[in-house]
Image (cartoon, rainbow, N blue to C red; front, top):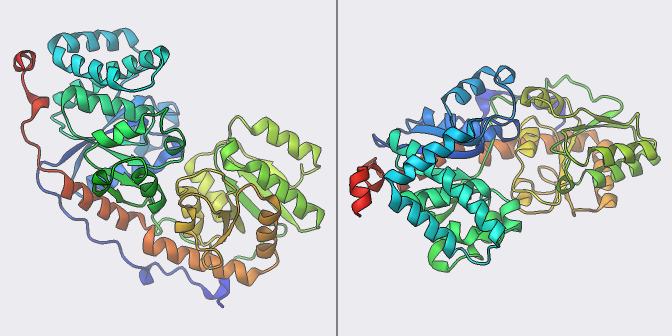
Length: 447
């Protein structure tokens, strides 16, 4: 068994990313996102940039403005914000006017969109009213795509933003595709009309085998061939482990990143930390993130006398977060619901031993005892035992951390997975060609 001192992060010994493949000339994609850029979805930025580096013309549209003001965005994100088309740009009167004009010029698009809303089953009057707003946004998206000569629409996630994509596809008669992550859309299939979106989509990328299995159970087997697994990842050349001379701190540093929401299992983590505190195991836990559960979590810490053992940082920039993760001795994510968390991938790339739960796609990322430890969800006793085993065994920490980085290099390596994504898009898309999207308004009205 290797120790941390024996492991040297030699980038030259790691598998190199495949040379970017050049797509066929004319392949252009519109990405429709809920909020872009966003600190919690940096993988979307990486994906857009990765496809562009491989020769695709990718243009971005976002329903909402960025989650930070322009002067707070890093230079790369600020550049993306400047080039992104925003539907909710703070000028609702102008947006409504543009939608009205578009409707006059493209009445059949409006009628197709309205018919699609009427066909959706089991919607309340309030829900159908919400879908009318989605239709307005869909008209604006189609108008923008036509002006930019974009002939394919891709959407991440299956919620409201996919509702806009779904209507855009039907109203403007253009193909669209999805990347499904989970867990929200998989837990709210009927509320999100996910089946209808899957049937309308030309193809669907799933971030895990678990995710694909859930889509298969929602649809006829005739649809399954259009579901393919394209994993997310991180760039291991940018996330190098600490120097091998680094010594573990006392107390050991436990780090958890993620929004402070019930699904992330922070209360279970704090219960486990309390158990370890009572056993006299020296740990300090840092919770990075913010959210509606913060007050409840802070009250728990105060009432259990853990103020000196737990720190809340609030939300941090991605760079600041990575600094904390890289300096951790143990990374913990006690989630109840996930896709496959990028936060785990980042910690593993740093060679930080991870403890997480046996839910959704996480067991595809971590094989317990081999490149991390997994415990049942909502089980504070099991979680405490896993953390304790790492706290008491530096050799185990070193072994799991080294194996975890190897796992990232082989299967969750972002440049390699971007290459797979580019090839998948190239195989499914044909070069831009005249279609109903580029038809003149006069022809549209007489169709």
